[in-house]
Length: 306
Ligand code: ATP
Image 1 (cartoon, rainbow, N blue to C red):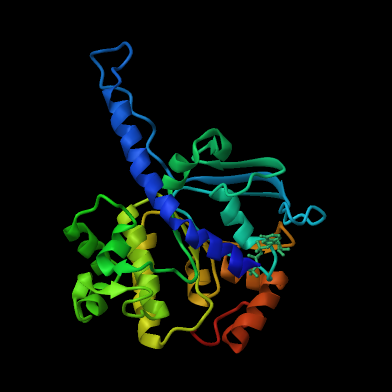
Image 2: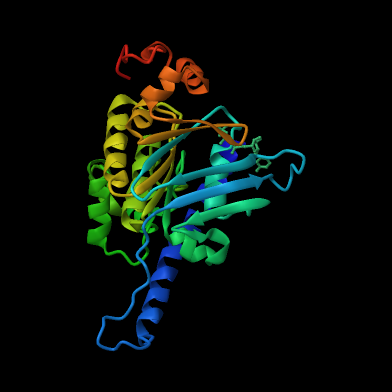
């Protein structure tokens, strides 16, 4: 389910990016409204987005499975600029958390808030303009590389697209393609590798410049060079943003400020990698299964760098 659910998310990426444009238009309209009172003071501006996430006792089941709660009174908060890794067994509710944040579904009870505002109190476009999503297996549409990246912010100039690509460590492979940024990709064009598509998606997100980053880390292995490039691109993207990442890689998990371990739609444990290993609970079991000998279960030290 997880994979297909996030497949759907990637399908709506267009909606997310269109939302950015809508929010900017809205900001323009708001700019024309005169300030009320206090003419000697600068006009009050809306609070800048801080990138804060809160789930408060969120209970949810998918409409097709009324008998099964995907989230059970789930509560957690992510502070502005914090990097939180979501881990947990398959079916624990990790993708569901992202779906509710983006408001593809409403909870049965409880509240999801972004920047202190309940997500059902803002229009979806404004909400989605606050977040950039990098799905596990990003799609490219038929068109040029330039158009594919510009999707992140339709009004971006060519120079801005190239700058984003360069920061996403995608510029090198793009320039090596027959027509560079004009190269057609997708159905009738050049086929990009998984790592290349990920860097296109990262470039889109850099261009979008939203305060909250939602990341579904790829499970499929990339070759070592592509892996390094993607990691470097993600480091650029995550800097200064609130990040909620469905994490599969030990490097990502260790770099997180906090790990939320989900089990059966609840937070089973939370803490840093080392603290959770030392605790010897669910996280330690998952880490042993997933990373094997790379992790010392006593939590005293890493046996091997992964
Ligand atoms: P994975 O690691 O496998 O991606 P996950 O932790 O992301 O799993 P979710 O995909 O959020 O888990 O699923 C949580 C629960 O909701 C599971 O029991 C799953 O079977 C169910 N579920 C997920 N998507 C749907 C859907 N579209 N319709 C019905 N049930 C769903």
